[in-house]
Length: 328
Image 1 (tube, rainbow, N blue to C red):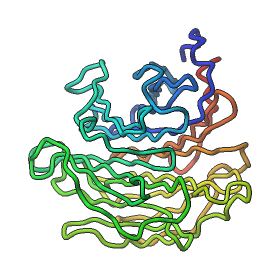
Image 2 (image 1 turned 180 degrees about the horizontal axis):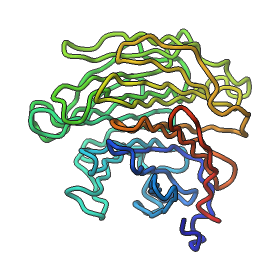
Image 3 (image 1 turned 135 degrees about the vertical axis):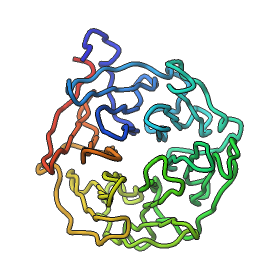
């Protein structure tokens, strides 16, 4: 880790957006400095070390807490989605056709309005001989919306599905979507997760034929009496997409992280278990990532104190924990 740059002494307490290649040999995770700059952290499995670089200068992204999501095309090209200071959803492209120089993407032409109470999620896959993306977000009325890139081979953004009856009734209601099919498989297998109005984490399911309800129905943790309108924090990851995938659903309750898992796209969810083992002070941000194929690597990010974040790496069902401090 490069500890020589005092810029990284700022507090890191915002959303995480990780991406991983098929074999899980490395990962990139994106998050925002307290100064407002958007930064990439790069981790290599063999070295088990971190390096950091700025990808978006301060003053462009919305202040701390702005929405953030990322996806990667064919193990290389990264597409980031964030909210700017006018509360519009923006796209930033890196690597692949764009090289090391971040470039703003075509979603910017739509001026999709968002705010701190909204959540955003994105997936990608290869279909109709072209890259495809599906972007999910809540609009100003908290209605869950979809935008699509690459549908029927059209290399442009178009309005997709509108989801009714997916509002939890609480602000900051998150949404998380995941593709359970490998990149080059012509048809995706999409699952989406949100908190419903009855106080449960539930699942949406897309296969050929359209959208339907999935099998998850996990009770949401009790509300924090100090913040009764705040929705619960959760994330989802999957491994083994080239065989029968394992899906992991994580959430925060009582300053701990819990997980429930299923084997198979429509398998039976198991019992919940603790990931952290001990309480951690204010783990208010949470993101998970899994290696799509090969090793069953899973990574979990939670916010820590001050300028630190906690990185957990699970290999062979054993969690390894490190506290990462980009400023020391």
